[in-house]
Amino acid sequence: MWKTTKSSAAKQRATDRKQADKAIKERDKARLVRQEHVQKLKALRLAKEAADKETADREAAEKAAGKATAKKPRKAPAKKASKATAKNK
Image (cartoon, rainbow, N blue to C red; front, side):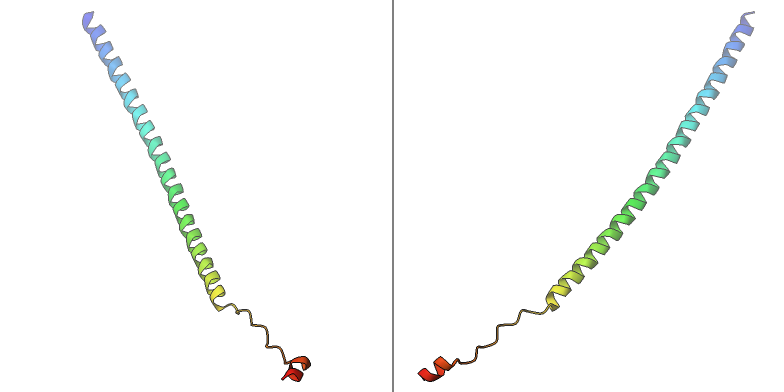
């Protein structure tokens, strides 16, 4: 009788161990799926940030180039000698 009790307990432990191993594998698989998802999102975020930076740099360069080639304000034209100054001479 004692052997059957021992063997059934051993079977139960083996079954419990298999279930525990299966649960661990499922958790690991879920963790890996989540990790891959996070890595994909990170890659997309970094790509977007790089594109935004490139766009901002390009716009800043265009703005700087636009300011450099912008027309300088012209000086006021020299006034013609007025009649009063011509008479004084």
